[in-house]
Amino acid sequence: MRRQPLEWWRPLIVALLALALTGCFRHDVATVVAADGSGQLTIAVLLEPELLAEAGDDPFADFDASMPGSAQLSDISDGEAAGRQAVITFASLPELNELVRGPLVGPVPQGSATATFEHFEVAREGAEFTFAAVHPEFIIDADAGFDDADGLELDGTVVVELRLPGTVLEHDADEADGDTLTWRFPIQESTTLLARSQVELVGGYLDVAGTTHADAIVWVTERGIATGYDDGTYRPAATVTRGQMATFLTRALDLPAGDASFPDVVDGSAHAVGIAAVAQAGITTGFADGTFRPDEPVTRGQMASFLQRALGLEAGTSSFEDVGDSVHADAIAAVAAAGIATGFDDGTFRPDRSVTRGQMATLLSNAAPVG
Image (cartoon, helix red, strand yellow):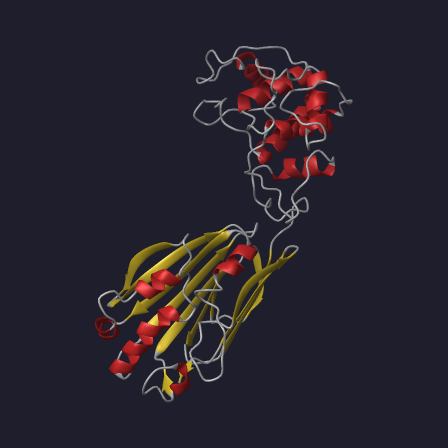
């Protein structure tokens, strides 16, 4: 059963009462957000030696229990202070904002203990990212359910570190170092944290600026060969499937519709038209068992063969040390000679490696002058 947001604070507050505030603690929250909304959230608590001594045999058991199951937990230290840290990865901003609900954000009933923040959220609108958090005054009194707690103030510090993607436009942080913002404040003070940044849009995408394939991605986008995702990303590092490859080639070559069919390609599916078109054009024949396997990643070797057939390139002799007797050897040599594809710095082509969406854009833009 998931613990309530306040649970992990209870042993800490009891220890503070016992020590009459001779010890102190620090609560750290670090959030790194990428342009596609993924990132990493780190939550940590550090206790000074006096407080740690009063906190029991397992002072961080409640802290561990309050974290999501995906958290990577570890012991940490900072000088004489010792503590516990949870590192949590997230794939999207909605996931981040859901993850903080338990360990960071809680209700704020009058006159009682609260979680660290009333509100903690990162949002994105187009190319702009906004961070907003509200830390309430954290004062414990008798209504919080602790004996002898009338008017007790917690002796602690909250440190929030934030890295938003792109260029920081405005913030109210105490420190700013490039794209890293830091707030430091006593836990008993009410505080508002605000920051805003903007990423550079390339081709209309949030995650293309600065990548190797940026120009090619713009090229395929402008020609309607490839489109991005609903979240504003292109995802240049994502793997291209054989079905997607067929659609990209059909658009790039403006192939007519075909009537070729494969038993594993469902009529009306996303890439059925493209698969039929490339098969009809003789660019692909599928596998020996009659299937096309549209959901499998397309390899660099397969892509070389597709392009060789599509463009009518003459076969050549491969000079890559890892191509050998590959069924795609001639095609790899042909696309390399035509300047469509190059190998890696170590002299390999890596024909069995999957093609990414960024690489696909570059291959198609390189092939345009040849075609």
